[in-house]
Image (tube, one colour):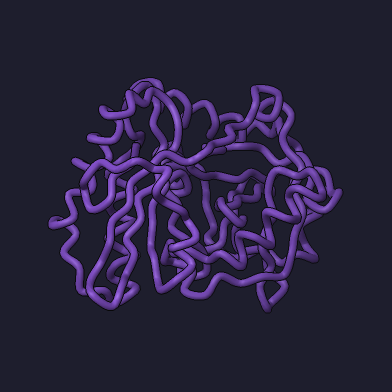
Length: 262
């Protein structure tokens, strides 16, 4: 079951291929214990995507929260990911709300970190979360062929900006580094990590990290809807410390916050 323009339909009648036509913006929300975590952050980012795309859409008229909660109740979702899509058509907009397959990191991955690789790619208008089938297909192929958890994108200045479906942080000399807006998507978990650092007096420098310098950093991690806060063990074979004290501290605060509020 899914929602099309806020009406339940059989999801067998729907194919995501339709989103390759025209322009679509979207959000992926994570359900934990029957509730969408940090929902307000998703709503704010959706509003940002609408405005940055110059779409004449009143966010309040979409009733996004009601639709998400309706699907959760209809499908009795306790845990998983929900995708909300606004597709722009010549006659107006269409809304789609449905569950998508999810893959969450294992406990071992959180303990020991994951392997990643890089590729040269740029997401145009990076602050907007829009359907980009070409980039997704390319990075999915790399992930599958190389057996890694994520692909980190390198821009025209040879700097690492973000992951194909995540944000990325580096730690060196007790300072956190992450690429700033407008070079990256304003991730909801990224925002949460920035808040945690601020509340705990941890220094964050928002600047891109040049690929040639990554070996000088002690630790790295990705953030996102599915990984939450996940240590990186290797980038292109270069090793990082998944047990760095500041990384562990941020992870503890993030997961405590999650358990406390949901």
